[in-house]
Length: 167
Image (cartoon, rainbow, N blue to C red; front, top):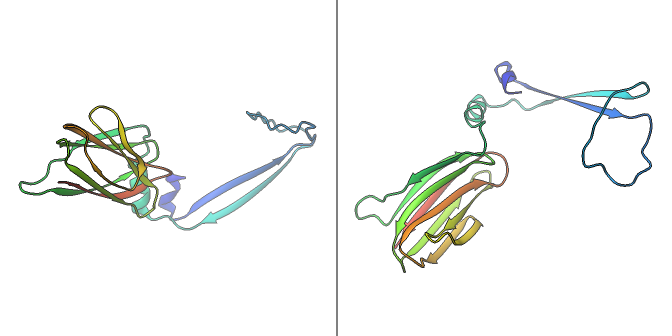
């Protein structure tokens, strides 16, 4: 479908197959093997969906790989107590932000996502998760070390903005 983007429209082809013999089992199979044989019918259907924006498709093509992690250390400007990072992420990928902090400091995280499908986990230096699948966090840190803020998408691709404050 991505190759068709240059045509400025996207065509979705669906095929409905109806077997001649119905199953008597009420259990659904865990896998399907389908062969078209005599007596089966094929009902093609065509649906034209809205015209994709070219910049979105270019972004999708660059993000096709899944299961990848990108790690970045966050350092605040001198005298600053926070920073803001922004990114785009696809399902199965993770953006990991490392933050050095001291015991008893307060960490405040606020995540916004236009698509409302991006979340984060907060992991302490010990490996313990302080928060999972969240969009906001405020907590006193239990130890000194590198904390990981792990950003991921709950479904599809999403853009995000993460505000980080440590006091």
